[in-house]
Image (cartoon, rainbow, N blue to C red; front, side, top):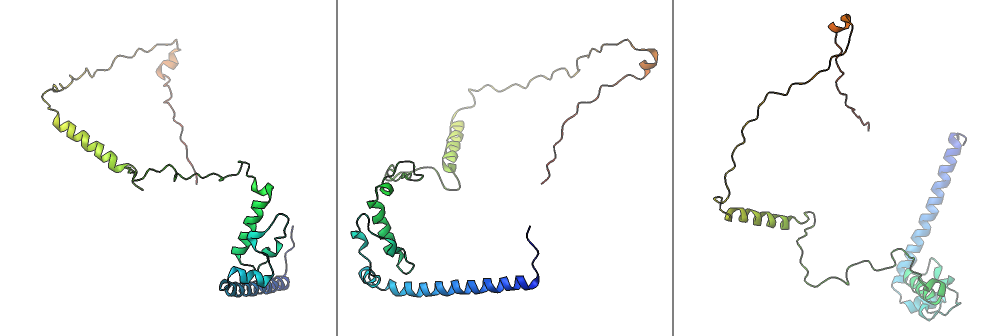
Length: 193
């Protein structure tokens, strides 16, 4: 368990954290200024400035660690890494077990001028409405003369059937206080949350 720190140790840690944050901010600003200067230069000028080889001309076994410096722009670093991945057989051999390695878009299967009834947020609403309108039109076109009118059903006898109750042998005292079967119980669930 950690000890409770007193005020001065917490204050010292806070001052140290502020100093580290200022150093990191100053480094980030210096890198941003350097990157903005490098954005104006062409790739050949940047490679000459850092004494780096052309990333597209790298061969197997060449050192690419110079491209990993923070001062080198990302576009040159990516070009060097792409070349490295193509040259190294371990990195270049995709074994098929890579997640998202395939193109799962349906761009290859899309038919030009494809039209669908699906609407974003509404689904197939227009299609369903069209089917309902067709059903209404069909109902209006069919004459009702062909369909015999439905006759109302005669009411059934509302008297319930008699219930047979078996009598058990009970003493005379218990006959006055007949036991009533308990009503069925239902389970109730309550969720807290």
